[in-house]
Image 1 (tube, rainbow, N blue to C red):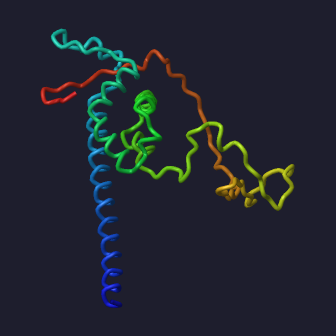
Image 2 (image 1 turned 180 degrees about the vertical axis):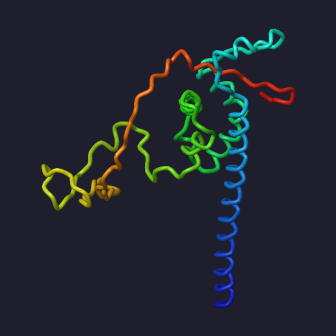
Length: 200
């Protein structure tokens, strides 16, 4: 009986190992499909330049789209891969279709790369999220310094709730030299690059 129990114990950790490996393999596969789908979708959109209007062929006029229309046009080919990845990583409750399209519109407007768009979904999110806005507002500040003292580099304090605590260490921000450049919001126009084999 002791030997049988030991064998069962050995098998249970093997089963757990293979189940974990299978889940990781499935997530890697979904992630790879999502990355390819997003990169392909981004290749179908191009920022419209004013001088292109003259060179546009009269046979094949290109329809100008605003960032929202462009985001909706390129979301369709990546939607299935995105949905499967979010389901596999259990993130589907945090990202609605509307929020994904809004973020895609933001990325297109600001000439962000597919990798920048994907970063929100591929990097691990917070361990705890409050979907209900009424929760998460009441915190307790625990610090060795007086609450009224100014923050200084290296200072450590914690913010506590009943179920967990955040430990915060104060670090200086790097110095940023900013310059201003005006971009006319009316210049955000895009065109679809359609080829015969395009599935969009």
